[in-house]
Structure formats: C-alpha cells, structure tokens
Length: 310
Image 1 (cartoon, rainbow, N blue to C red):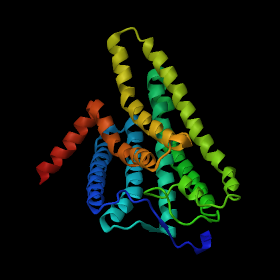
Image 2 (cartoon, rainbow, N blue to C red):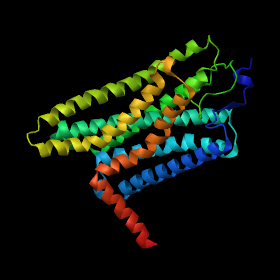
Image 3 (tube, one colour):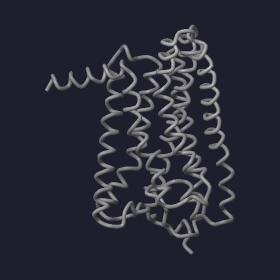
Image 4 (cartoon, helix red, strand yellow):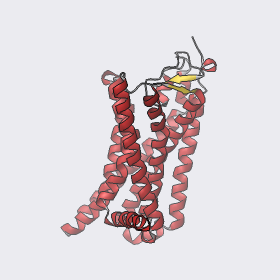
C-alpha cells in the first residue's frame, strides 16, 4: 500500500462524467466566480472609497468580502481547470496549499461573522456605548484577531493532516482538498492522532456559534421591547442581511460535516460543499446590498463614476 512519502499527487472528484457536462460545469463555475469577484470587488471598492462608509459595520463587511474572494479563488480555479482540461489531478504540495488557504479563509469568515454579530448586538442593545466599545482601534484589533486565529487554525490543521501517513491510495472524494477526505486515506491507527488538534478547531467553531446564538437572543429581546412598530422594523432590518448570510453559511457547513453517514452520498456531499464554499461567497454581496441603501448608493456612485470617466 502506498504511504504519504510515495504520493506525488492526489485525484480529485470529477464534477461530471461526460465532456458536455464538464464544459457546462466549467461555464457555471466561471459565471459564479465572475459574479463573486464583481460583487465582492464592488463592496471592497465602495467601502474603501466612500468616507461615510468608514464605520465598524462596513469595515467588517470589507473584511468579509476579502475572505469571500479568498475562498472562491482557492477552490474554484482548480475545479474549472480540471473540468476544462478533463483531468482530476492535483499535486501533493498544491493540495496542501489549497487546504491551508481554504481553512484560512473559511475560518476567517466565521470569525468575522461572529464579530459582525457583536457589532449588531452593541448597536441595538447598547447604543450609547457603541462609539466606546467599537472604536477604530477596537475594530482593528478584532479584525486582526480574526485573521490571526484563522491563520493559526489553518496552519495547525494543515500541518497535522499532512503529517499523517496515508495508506489508502490517493483518490479524494471531493472536488477540492478537505480535511475529512484526506483523513479517509490515513492509516487506521494514525487516525486517532487527529483528535489531538481537532478539539481546538471544534472549540473555536462552537464558541463562535454559541456567541452568535446568545447575541441574537439578546438582540431579539431588545427589539421586542421597542415601543414603535417602525422602530422594531428598522432595528430588525439592520440584522436581516447578517442573519441570512450566517444562516446559509452555518446550516450548509454544519450539515456537510455533521450529517449522519446513513444519508451521505457523493452527490449530496458535492452539492453541500458547493453551497458553502462557492455559492455562499457569491451570494453574500447580493444579500448585504439588497437591504442596505447606503451601500447600494455607494456602489451606484462608484459604477457611474467609472462609466463617466470612460
């Protein structure tokens, strides 16, 4: 049986069996990628160029857009390349790099969504302390902590995953490199070593999830105490985009990783992984811009300004 020292490449899961479907998947991935690049790029540019958007909420939204762009650019180009050129191979180092950057951007996204939840909590439950609790220095420290935690988590998971001896071939049941798929290739006795560092990642994820749940319980209680219906609607509408984004991200990711083996199938696993790794980063800009008039106006000014210059 081959071990990790003899593996020079991995075989990724093909998105389709026929050439026509492969080209169709290439076109779909290309369209989603361009939509994600355009949407997230417009948000980054609009927030960076509009001084009235230099607020904590939009600062964290800019960071979220960066993490969305990163996650899309980590997984989709290789899948597009494989579909276009009818291949499934990825080098050993390429797989390690893809796994590291995917974990880095996904972890950063979850941490940033948690921080954005704190921003909504403070603005609704403690509005008089908003400027103190979310000053420019505090926001910079929180964003730096999110990116640093993501880097450390990705580094530990990637290093430990690729330190395991692999005894069960090199075929991954996924269209990109992911920890569970690589663990399936590891020797049975080495699989237990993985539990030494998985709890740290699980603790980070569970901690973020519980903080989000606790914050939204407090937010809903505060909103329901607002006397006017218009005030309740205005307060709740500021949380709606964040709630929609985080629900899509958490529901698909949790179901993908925690679903019972009895309902697991390659097609279901593929659909879920595409949802949280490809579709979610592409939809986030649309979800945030639909409900936010300030952001829509800034994006419109940016686009019309570019057209007028040309």
